[in-house]
Amino acid sequence: MTSLPPEASNYLLFSDVHLGADLVQHSRPWTASRLLAAHRIDETLGSMLDHYREHREDGRLWRVVIAGDFIDLVGMSISATPGVTWRTPLSEDDQTHGLGSAEDHAAFKMHAVADRHDLLFRKLASFVEAGHSLVFVRGNHDVEMYWDSAQRAFLDALINRASFSVDDTATREQFESRIEFQHWFFYVRGFLYVEHGHQYDATCAYHHLLSPRSPRDPRRISYSFSDILLRYVVRPTRELSPEGHENDSMFDFIRLAFSLGLNGCAKLGYRFFSAVGRMVATWRDHLSEHTSQIKAEHDRQMTLISNVFRLSADNLKAMTLLWATPVTGKFFSIFRTVFLDGLAGGLVACGVFALLAVLHVLPWMWLPPVLIALVVSIVVYMKLSKVLEPHAALRLGAKRLAELVPARYVVMGHTHKPMMEKLSPATTYVNLGNWTNDTVDDQVSGAPCTHLVIRHGDGGEPEARLCDWDGQRGPRVLHRDARASAVVDGSEAAAVRGIAASQEPSVQPRSA
Image (cartoon, rainbow, N blue to C red; front, side):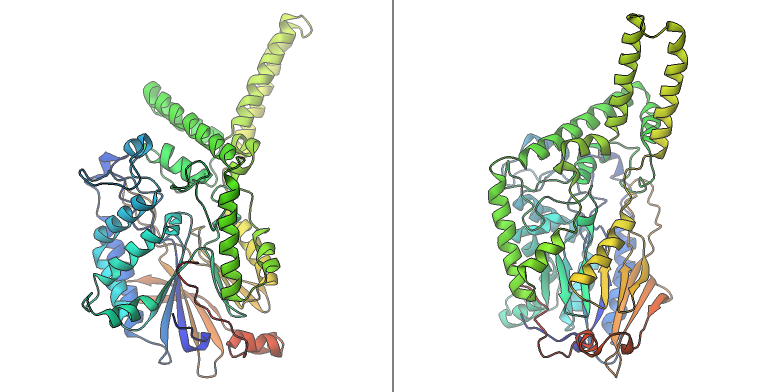
């Protein structure tokens, strides 16, 4: 792959498209007749790609950076095609919940997404074929892009939809050279830092980001806390959606359970406690001796990243220390995050009070008011406790990252909440928002369809615009960031403009 200085191209960034989030008919068969959203996202995002493909700014090519969760491989639930021979035999879990995270299963799902979103993949292929480049940063929902075969399936999907012949080796190699995959981040020194951001969210973080394989079965990905809930609780439960639970309390989930009736409540309870068992198993797996092999691969990938981006090993290590500890990394974190600590505490307290009453240590007349106070306390706890609050965590992570890897723009996704905010006079934080909501049942679209445009003017001074997109009117600027180079000293200004002689390559090999 060739390396270009940052001023050679303008940048177009977006994230959280979640293609394939509607391919869940194995676990949710009732959604089979409601598959219209694909056409909407294909037309909307495709029209944006067409617009920027046809409209270069200042004559520069575009470098598209997809900041994670472009493909929802984790959220998919599709059945294995009869007659297919799998390198990784189907497990009972694969047959019950749909194809899982094994390498060949991930490639199969990748092809299914490309077929489902044929129009969008054609638009993306045309974009790259026109000379623009593409950077694919892995998020938590497309963690299975860790596998080389999944990356190959993505490349083949684009190549098969391009206008050139697949037998044209030279053109094909040039096409592939403009596409790169990043397992962690994309970085241009002093100018741009991009990662998905899920490692700052304890519910979505992985134990070994650069080698997310299971110590128990290295042929498969080790699911995060949120992956487990999505696959084993949310997908099989008609009344649940992955979105919008940030402020839900334990009381909200209990109320939902009882609204399902006795049978529905029992099924949900079984799924819930089975998922908790899987979380505990994940915690135990990462304490086993097999974890050393996973960690060794993670460290090897760290070395590759250090060499490519010319960042010291100590610098990269400091960056990993900013990550949240995965929920499945601590035994009691699992129970606290699913509210079982409050439930257990209430049951223990009731048992103690009853025992004290039986032993006549506590008069029976005190038992009713004590129990009422206990119930009120539990209800207050359930109301006040939250499942997830990642927005502040990502912003804090971005601020600390800017101290370790100086960049004018620190860009993330994950939270689905677009924003642009100055972290310091020299650094701006951007969250890219999202392009689709996981609403496979009601097909309600409320995504902001936001993207970031970073252009270099004639003087080389970059300008960033956070925009939303409408297929009819085109881009609309929501926030603009254009600062004079005087806010940084001479060396920083040179790095920001990308003209420092020591500028390192901004392209990482796909194998890294």
